Image: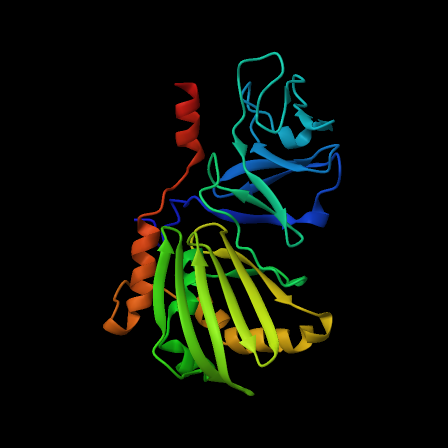
Length: 295
């Protein structure tokens, strides 16, 4: 089972770091998904990501130097390009797909992306501070599918029966018409992507609002979460941040102390559909990839 399981990692896009944290000709090794991944920005300003352990003797490539668009191992000088190909040697380093979007660096947990990062077209984006949440990313991402808690915890009233669909193997989408705070009739679409990402697409009066929630495993049953808020104009940003706070207020404290029980009721139909989808997603673990590469 993949859902709420810290030993498996589904193939999805994961937040690595803000774009500004990696300069040209700089390399950084991060501990992610139970392994070490080196990110480096080349002469062309593109970011690449490889398994950080050199396939020769296991040196940390992040301690090496970036030369043109490749990284040079500090131990014996082996040089790897962005595809993990080593100049002059048959050994290769596993290469992760990388995207740079919304002021952040993202990597896909697998050899090739199975789907694209969510596309949010509103031009103004603000990345909020990271948070460490005390439960698994799947639980944090699925919070917007827990229809019953909206009124209990957030005083958000459902004006119609929510509509659920799963347009593909990686997305669960819930369409709602709600009332909360100063907004009495709001159309909201909440979508999970890849098990660890989620988006909100809403229209608050004349103001469109987009939100991207990113959750990454952070050791055991914890998540490193980053939220991105999208608006049409910076003039709308204060009210957008207020709306986002209103939507998620109260969740953090409960999620930090949540000890999940798989005791779903009929009212948990949306969460149940998400759980089934996550359990069918493909996973990727580096130790399995290394065995395939060696064979």
